[in-house]
Amino acid sequence: MDFSKSVYYDEYKDGQAAYVYMVRCEDNSIYTGIARDLRRRMREHYYRKKSAAKYTKSRQLLSLEMAWTAPGWPAAAKLEARIKRLSKKKKEALIRKPELANIWFPELREEGVYMPCEGISLEDCLKEEESTSMDRLEEQISFLLEIDKQKEIIRQTYLADGSRKETDAEHAWHIAVMCMVLSEYANEPIDVPKTVMMLLLHDVIEIDAGDTYAYDEAGNATKRDREVRAAERIYGLLPEDQREYFRGLWDEFEAMETPEAKFANTLDKIQPVLLTDRAKGKSWLEHGVRSDQILKRNERTHEGSEVLWDYVRDIIKKNTEGGFIRGEDNGA
Image 1 (cartoon, rainbow, N blue to C red):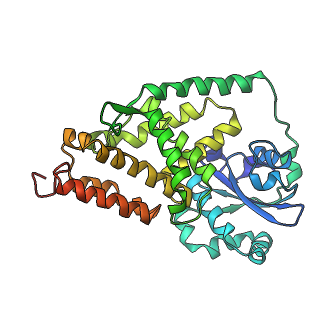
Image 2: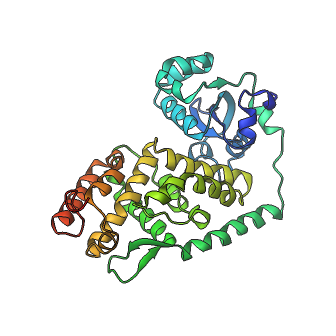
Image 3: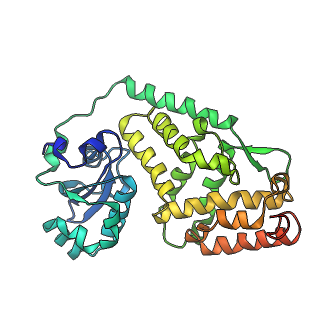
C-alpha cells in the first residue's frame, strides 16, 4: 500500500492523525490497537519487541486484517475502545466490511470519518527495516536528562506537613503510587501499568509550559497552547516509537475519554485536596480559594471513581464549614 495516498497523510506527517488496526494472531484471536506509525507498530508486534503489547508478546502475529485512518489520537482511541467491546463474530464482520465502523458507531461521527486503509498487508509493514544505532540510546538519554528538570518545578500544593511546596516530580511519583494502591476504586476496569505510565509522564510538559495553578484564570487561558508546544518538543527528544507511544499517552490523558485517562485525571485532581486538607488548608487560605471554584474544577472527577470523589467531596465540605475554603457567599 502507498501510505502517501491515505486521506489523512498530511496530518499524519504532522503527527496529528492516527491508525486503528485489527490483527490476527496464531490462535485465531483478534487484537485491536492504535498507532501513529502503523508500519513501525506492526514490526513491534511481529518481532515481539519490548514496546509491543503484552497480548501480542505471547501470541505470534499472523496478519494485519484491517486498518482505518482517524483524525487524531483521541478519535482513534474512541474507535479502538468500541471495537474491543465487540464479540468475535462482529469483529469478523467488521473485517469483511470495514465501512460498518461508521454505521455501528454513529456517536463517533462528530470526530470525523474513519477511512479504511484498503490493500495493506503485514508484509508491506515488515519491508522497511528499523535502523539500529547508538543514535537511539543518545536520544533516550537526552530525554531522561531533560525530565530531570521536573525536580525543579514547584507546584502550589504543600506537602502534607505544610513544611514546603511539592515539586512536579514528587507529584508524579505520588499519584503513580496512588494508582497502584487505589485502582480497585476505578469505575471501570483499567490497565494499571498503562495508567501509571500516563501519570508519570503527563506533567513532563511543565518543564516548558510551567505549572499553572488550578485557579489562575489568566494562566489557564493560555495553558493548552503552551502545553501542546511543550509536548511536541519534549516527547520529540525520544526515538520515534517511544515518542509516538508517550505522546499518545499524554493525548489520551488530555482527552479524558478512556477508563485509564478518566481514573488518571481523578487521581491528579484529588491528590492536591488530600494534601491541602492535611496541611490545614494552607494553599487554599493563601489564594482565597472558594468552594465553587473547587467544585467547578472537579466537575468530571467522579467519572474516574465515584467512591474517591465521594470521599474528597466530604473533605471539601468539611474544610468549607471549617473556614479553610471560602464559601460561595463569603466574598465570592
